[in-house]
Length: 281
Image (cartoon, rainbow, N blue to C red; front, side, top):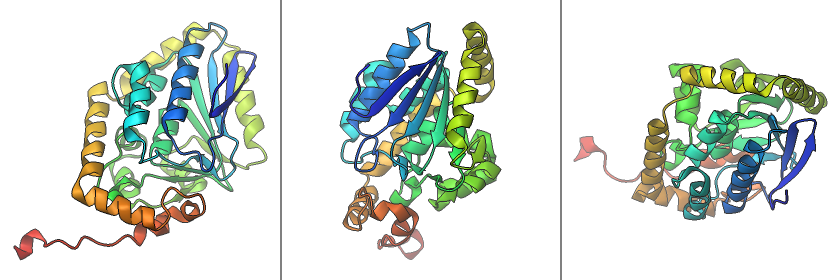
């Protein structure tokens, strides 16, 4: 398999996919195209049972979507799920017979966070992993599954905290809140994930599929809820306020590698709304 943004190797029923899309692993049409191809190919290969995703960039796992390429990456997602929605693409990964594991180092924000939430398990480097759902800073809501997953994983209060604050959370806090399975020392993370993946792949594949189906019946939101969140995200980003705040963020370095090392502070410095409040009218 040849990919533009993924380096894939096979080991005893496990596909290890390393993400590399310079300069900062933005989720754009090329990465979505590669994810579609990887999922399609792996699902029809009886020899593959587990997918492990990691990043070749120590500072960024998946930063977030490329906001300049929304129509293009949605079109790539539609090639697998029949609808222009990365939320439904990620949900397809959750539904798949394949067991998926995210091995997280560096920043995973916005749709990057939603991608790892769609994976069946998430393990993160204690020293470097950073998580964030920043959509509220742009006047919109997460559109690719975070509302559905985080509310179920964390409970109402913590889900509202992390999504409404648009703040960065380190791996230890993410572990306490249920965002990830475990935070591990970076030096131990790759071998821990590899050993777990190979152990799972050694068990009967049919049992994995049945188990995922039963767990999903309890925990995976209906596709209609993902569609609704996707629509709301698009409406918010295209609203006058969403456009204004996106433009302001771009002027401050949004979607540049250096500026996004401390994205939470950049977003906190965006200009406040200047229009009249309803109470002033």
